Image (cartoon, rainbow, N blue to C red; front, side, top):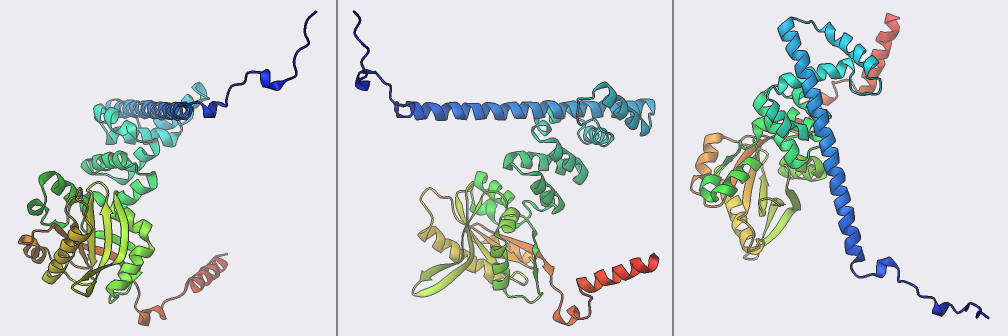
Length: 358
């Protein structure tokens, strides 16, 4: 006679939850990271193949138009025929085929397309050849977009603000004050002029107003400064010999591993500004700089730079300092504001004109 099964749950062997097993969480994180990395590689591979496909189609269209004298209307016919032959394929519209032709024309060298441009999404590539007509500038923007992970809107912003032409143009003493690797990097990080046209200020605005405006628009300000700048503080307080001093803006650059002191001036550059920033840099290096940090860097931003005066002022200074100009949107004088129509008045006038035309 068989014994009845026991109802005692304590006799049943149970395993602990997987989350309590030694090393389980580590395994979970590792698998998750590998899956995500594979997904990214797959997405990049798909994008690369698509970009190369588009370039090849554009090249073939361009070559036949050049060699056989085909007109522009052939693209209309080709788009219609491709839609019938490949009904499930997107991206073969007339407009996109014309983009492909322009894309191939902008990048005639296939190795550059394979090694560089194919890393960027199609929307980025359209903006590159539409917004940037200079081949060297276009190449620079493509490299920068990949290196810094620019979104399409950020890429367009930098092209329209002519970043390529402004990058590395500040007047500096970096070649004499910094070792070669860091001097080259620091020089490329500074530009001239800086574009602060997101600010609207009066011609005689105080420097404090400019400073407040930049901090109030810190996201746009950081975008203009470039990648790697971390905001430390505004009117950063220093006490030396029982006297108070205030740095206009203090940043830390993650790639340079150095503090960046920014002094704002609302007028033309003056030689004494370099001495003041040199003083600030000495204090920051002594009180804030970590032993592993690089020497702190100063940047003087003025409405007008004065190239020769800036070069003389920095020549015998040991601390690394740059001088750049900046641009802002000029606010209308108060005396002129009252004589201009308001938005409401303009809208009313446009409505009246439309009624008269009807």
